[in-house]
Length: 152
Image 1 (cartoon, helix red, strand yellow):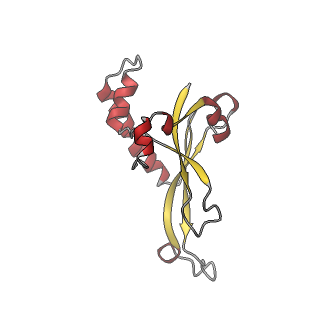
Image 2 (tube, one colour):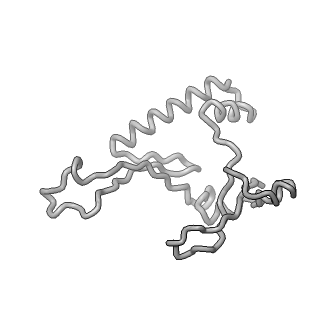
């Protein structure tokens, strides 16, 4: 089973409705860049060298961006769908004719919707069932734990 590290932090924002409450946050160990991911993939019994896998991942990235910028969604079976959404400026335009991208669009976002078909469901509710959660506090030596919070 996959292991997800988490830490628990107190909400210290006095303006928040949840001030003083405690919440869990994922604690990532590392961010894999494309090269490291390519190496990892090639180590899983692949007949392809890390350079070939890297080339395919780079081509995927550039083609994904190209398709998204051409108003297309990209569905990767077993993973999910990439798509774009617009973020508008506050207030909107007073009429359809007054709306212009330069004045009324704030951002163009890339979004991702996980696969939700029955056999390959990685939606949030199903994904959580595949993970084992380990508190970061369980991995800290007792003296570090007592000396105060560890900076992320």
